[in-house]
Image 1 (cartoon, helix red, strand yellow):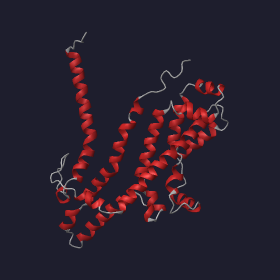
Image 2 (cartoon, rainbow, N blue to C red):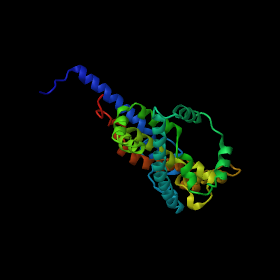
Image 3 (cartoon, rainbow, N blue to C red):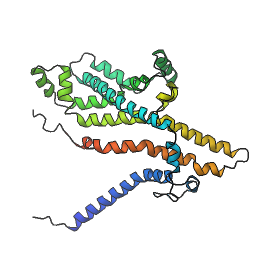
Image 4 (tube, rainbow, N blue to C red):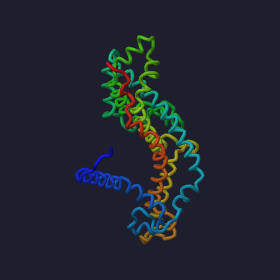
Length: 298
């Protein structure tokens, strides 16, 4: 039997859909505006007034970025760093979180306190640089991976998820003769996919967007990252505009016609954001799906 709609239901759904539409527009508008600026001529962009559609369509901003051959090598290095760094960091973070989630672990409380403290206190940039130098990780790919193997926030996030799982799952596995590695990878990990997917996305975005460690620790062109190369393009664009202004304060229109810092900034944002946008839909289901429901009844 079909449901009969009354005016209260229609009004309620109408208000909900309107609010959701406005929220979606507010969420998407900043990114669509950046896409429009990146596809618009640089000089025309300085006039302002661009919303979600380019006024004078052009691909010159992307051509300026992509014509640099080093971009492709840097992109491959960023992909390698993101894949390898994410897998290793997720493995180490999950193992640490499992250890400090065990109620029978002797050093559970001291390690929890140490990890939480590290979120608020650090040695600073200079001691960090000296440490990396003493470990001989400068001008090495390892500097992208090892310092970020374990993140305090991610450890706390996974540990909190492990804490709310039924303790009987571990006891049942122990009675069947499973060791800690088997309990972790055969019991805990399969039913913790939502939090692991969330942490995976956090770590991957962090690795993909990182460039400052490249700036500090790596001077080899072969180890340069995509974001660092894009940052150099942006700096060169700003320097070109500043130099062309000269003492007269007038900017050379020919340079601006090719690129402006505003257009380059928008183009860079689009380039580095698109891979994350493509990956996110495949992981979204883990944020809303509770795979532990009905796993065990006590």
